[in-house]
Image (tube, rainbow, N blue to C red):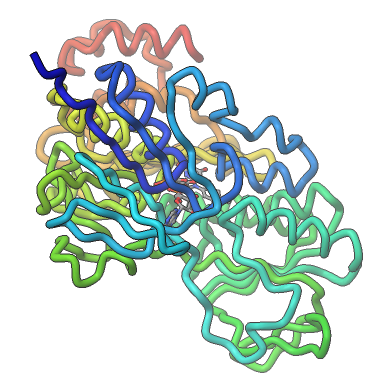
Length: 428
Ligand SMILES: Cc1cc2nc3c(=O)[nH]c(=O)nc-3n(C[C@H](O)[C@H](O)[C@H](O)COP(=O)(O)OP(=O)(O)OC[C@H]3O[C@@H](n4cnc5c(N)ncnc54)[C@H](O)[C@@H]3O)c2cc1C
């Protein structure tokens, strides 16, 4: 009797989503061939830790999430330093920049996202960086070792504020240039952002709100950034963090359904047979918005990769829906936010002379989102209320939080989620 041919799995991208998928595939299929293609020449590492590496707080080895042994023990072939440049879905074949081709039975696109470019005169000067890859962090470290003028950070998102913290840790002077009126506009409202603002100003950061860089000046090296209002900021380093765009260019014309990223269903399958997508390149269903949208967060990439990997290997798995959630500690202020910004009812409060801020957003009879800044106890419990769409009375929840949930009868008003609350209390 002829033996069944082992399945050929090809994964494009060797990061959060691709690695999680490969791991999941191997758990379900012990004989299939798994190949990961990566344009970076590294084992899998945490992009989230790049600012810590710049700050000198972690070594390169500590950022590795999938060491050589990860691939060897799972019989995963890693082809690195190769870029996928084309896809022929009818032939089930991927083309690489070297001209080689790879045939697949099942393909995962996990190519992530790239930093959005900045249109400004002088943008090609050495000293300008996007922080997305290890090589970017290496470049920033090199410049820092040879220059002493201030640095300019453009953009107040995760990349911007984490870079800011790294540079402050190194004792550098920093200008932060933000086009909106707040930092971390994807996760904070203005009030929570203001808590950080005070901490930043205490540390001597020059924050330029409602501002953008229109040009860079210099000859061999970067010497200044010029703001739209004409202000000149002398600098030898600029880090640009103006958001990301999914890496989908090589898929145009293949018939794959694209929005900004690749549209996927709740199994992370694309509209093309035998092709899945996960991570920053994919647009799964956003649980709260009720529509497909990119998430650009590490935990969603891992979760999406796991779901895709299971389905690719024939084990049915459904993506729970990306929940917009993040936690950051910046200059000693901790903040967590999750879920929706707007709802039927919003309860906001401040304590400790403004050092602690809390906002709860309610919709459709439950907690739809929250922001905790300065005191993040109860974040786990609040996230599970949002995720599970638990019915909850706004007043009861707010009062319960004020009392640290010591007022037992109130717990029954939280839809019976007492174990969650109890474990949260133990956590805090
Ligand atoms: C500085 C920084 C800080 C961050 N902080 C946080 C945080 O605090 N919390 C959080 O949740 N998220 C954070 N993120 C975002 C998080 O890192 C991403 O959501 C996550 O890395 C997405 O994983 P991914 O597997 O989808 O793709 P990526 O990590 O982007 O990896 C994709 C890989 O595919 C490669 N690739 C691209 N195109 C091709 C191709 N054509 N052929 C072959 N290979 C290709 C890329 O080079 C890359 O190696 C941060 C990101 C950065 C850069």
